[in-house]
Length: 138
Image (cartoon, rainbow, N blue to C red; front, side, top):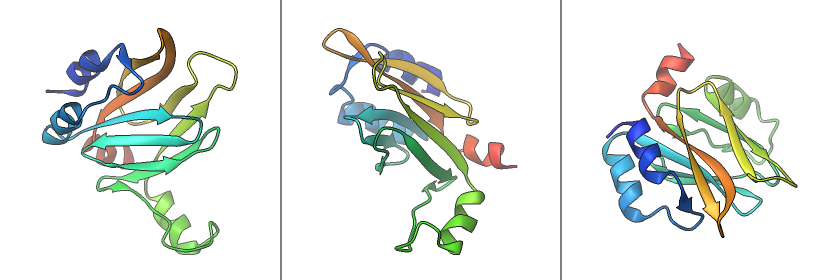
């Protein structure tokens, strides 16, 4: 399965609807599903299984192995800044008064899907191939 096929499968899914089966399909095919949870979390499922705290928006930094995590207690840590600069950014955009609540911006080639909550658009999630991160970085 490719990113477009998985995004089509996920399109219209309920906010709580990304299943273990969806995540397993993504992982098996080297795909990553990205969507928002509440107003403060960006969820990664599939080839990356993690989340990032992004209260009302923020950035996730990735390389071809997954999320780049800050191993320091200081966000100004030179090590983290150097590692982060080698990666690719996914910008989580929180729309405080709008539907959807979450959208994402990135240079990584990706497909989108609509995630619903009580018949209203909650999030426009993305699906991408993990190996495409390396192509964007080069």
